[in-house]
Length: 257
Ligand code: ZN
Ligand code: FE
Image (cartoon, rainbow, N blue to C red; front, side):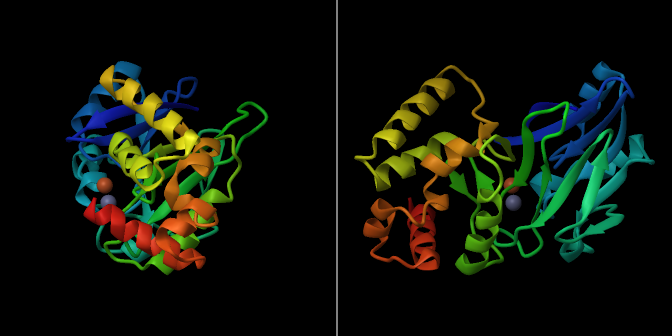
């Protein structure tokens, strides 16, 4: 399974999973149809699945048109998003498994950004030594999603599930928010050398027009402030040793940043 990243709208990424031998493809969070249709033509691949992480327009906006071109493509989404995702046919819950070609993904229920948000995690296999995590708007490189429909409590639990995945997992998140996220991270921890270094790296990449997605979960665990509620620096900044309070205060600071 190969993963291709397509930029869409102003700062979204759409991911196309491709299996060249079988000439099939799947798409994660098609913000729009056109770039996906173009790539499918180029690859000479047939779309068999649409995996949605949540109901927001910039994640499901392409569903209708993709279904017009590929009526047999199966549309997956969260059971909690029933009625909110165009053409949804499969209603997923925590612990469910979905398959594409020779790979299977575990469905993780990760509410917080929205009440129905799910993530898709493809563990490593004998052929592929790295795992793939499609996290939608739950975890970003250096950040996390805003709490539109959920609570800090839920988000800590959800991010905790993602943080528990192996270090050697690629994080495919749905937005290029990385530079802004690390500006915030550096503002919160100006004296943390690991964050300083990461900020410099991200700034260089963006100046050269490079994408910062995917990152490795290993790196997120070390530098993403929204995963590090156990870190003393962040507990000092937020004046709390309670994970939910530490996270919640950081999230409010970021909302105003
Ligand atoms: Zn969203
Ligand atoms: Fe989004």
